[in-house]
Each structure stands twice: as structure tokens, then as C-alpha cells.
Amino acid sequence: MEKFLKKLNNKKNLTFEESKEAFEILMNGKASDKEIFDFLTFLSAKGEVSDEIAGGVYVLREKSKRVNVKDCVDTCGTGGDGKNTLNISTASALLLSSMGIKVAKHGNKAVSSKCGSGDVLEALNIKINLEPKDIENQIDKNNFGFMFAPNYHSAMKYVGPTRQKIGKRTIFNMIGPLSSPALVDKQVVGVFDKKLLKIFANALNNLNIKFAWIVNSEDGLDEISPYAKTNIVQLKDKNITEIIIDPKELNINADKFENLVGGESKFNAKKMIDIFKGEDNDFSKAVCLNASAGLVVSGKYENFELAYNYSRGFIKSGAPYKHLVKIQNA
Image 1 (cartoon, one colour):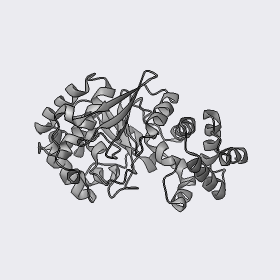
Image 2 (spheres, rainbow, N blue to C red):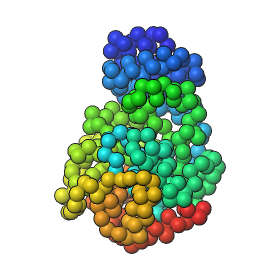
Image 3 (tube, rainbow, N blue to C red):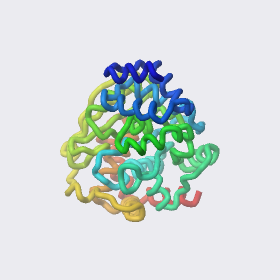
């Protein structure tokens, strides 16, 4: 571990192979608390690069419990945007599943917000503590399965106490959303900082992801925003391109940002049920925008505007609520 710490302390980047080796030491419990602390803080001070993130993701995926599914999409964000919004990526995952897209959702309970994906799904009476076989069955039956991260990444126990001691974002906030136990190769990822867009795209490229959208909005969301332009870096078949989505061009008349502010899990769950029953508001528009990204990366739509218009018609029909009830009763 010493050689990696020395390199990082000298502000030098680790290669993909070096990162894998360092994370192997961490995830096998062979690093001391001080080494873990130094590794994470040196990385943060230097600034994490795509090879380092990809190395961490590679090891975390290798050590996770495996969920065997095919042709699934994951939608998640890094969190940490500080906006305390309603659970947009979780709602868009459920909406996608109701539109026939298989979703293997990977997430946790609240870390940087009041209500994480695990919290809101529990408030919706959706089971979150499921074994791989159960998740595979759920996806097969209802196009939706949730992998609760702590149940699937037991190797994280070695770094948990040190992460808490550091008390701020580390490379693990970036690795987590990319470390799906289902090894999805189609993903919509929200990031808390525009600087991470290309870094994440290159990291995912290292990991042989087929199609991903990495998103960050100009009003600071790790989601596609209905209020401001969103910068997107697309990774498709090893090619990286940049896209901008402007809600004005889609004739989205969203009212005010306060309409997306969330609360405790029961509050957020109620807001989700309302839009799935057809209530039209800013939250519904935001969820449709982000679900449309999932429709694009899944391959169902090539044109984002057509995907958005389809999502809007579908959510207003009330059909997603019927699908939600099926998931609740599974």
C-alpha cells in the first residue's frame, strides 16, 4: 500500500491496474485505518481520475453478490448535490419499469439527503432486503428489482468507519453508483459536479459499458432538470459525445425549483404516488425527463424528444400506478 500512498501524496495519478491493486488491499481488509484514511484523503486532495474510479468499481463489482439478469438499465446519481430533491431517479426507474424497460436499480438509504432510494421504496411498501434470486424473479415478473447496496457489498465494511471519520465525499461516492451487482451495461448516472461528466464517461468506457448518459444540470442537480439546461456526456459503443438538453426546446413550462424539494420518506412516497396516478406538476415533468434518458440508453427510442412526449402521455394515463401496485404485491 505504501507505494500507492507515496504516489498519491506526490499528486501522481494511479493507473487502472494500480488502482485495482490498491482497492484489492482495501476491500480484503488488509489496510490499516490510517492507510485507508490517507488513501482516501490523498486521492481527494489530488482529484480522482477515471482510471482510479474504474479500478475501484472493478474490484467492488468483483466482490459483490451477483444478480444474473440481462438487458437491464440502472438509473442512479452520486447524490451530494445538496438540493434535497424528491427521489427523481427512483421514480424514473419505476416509471421505466411500467413502460416495459427492465430496471435493476442499485441504491442505498439516505447519506447526503433526507431520503434515499431505499427509504422511499420502503415507504412505498416495496421490499428492499431481497436475495439475488428474488430480485431476478422480480425483474422477470415486473421489470423492477432493487439491490440494497449494504446487502451486496460486504467488503465495504472495511472502509465504512474511516469514511464516517472523514465525514465528506470520497472516491466511494463516485464508485458506488457504478458498482451494480447486476453488472448492467446501460446506465443513466447523475453526477454532483460538471467536472465529473467526462471522468465518469471514461471510467465507464474502461468497464465496457455499452450505453450510458452521465448528466449534470446547470442549476446543480445530479439529474436532468426541468428548469435549466442539462449537460450530458454520452458513452455509446466506445464513442464519447456531448449533448445539451434544454427544457425550453421541449416546451416544458416548469414553475419553480421549490416544487422539487423533498422531505421525509413518507412525504416523498406520497408525491410519487400522486404523479403515478396522473397528477401533472414539476415533479412529474422531472421524472419524465429522466425516464426518457433511460428509454434512450435502453434502445427503445433514439430521439429524446419523442421519448419525453411518450413518457408524458404514459404517466398522465395513470398506468404507472397500476404497475406500482403490482410491484408492491409481488
